[in-house]
Image (spheres, rainbow, N blue to C red):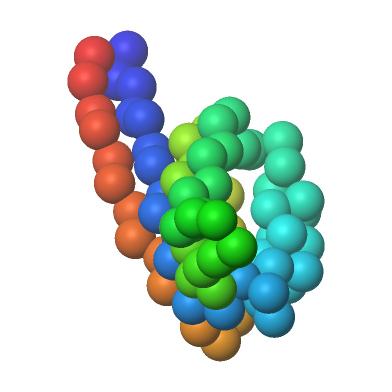
Length: 87
């Protein structure tokens, strides 16, 4: 049986302004998000305005496509997809 491991990389250029919109999409697809990891620069009193979220997605191409489309429609959000296939 072929299994795909799908990772979406979501780059958010203005976390403070766009986090609510991005979170709304994450909530809509919450049952399809197996793993979520957020990355942004933090040091002392500094907290970066941009960041990356890595998502491991389950579900078929329709689910992935819908999520990528919804996230990509948000200004300042870029999505890249990685698919690892094996049997």
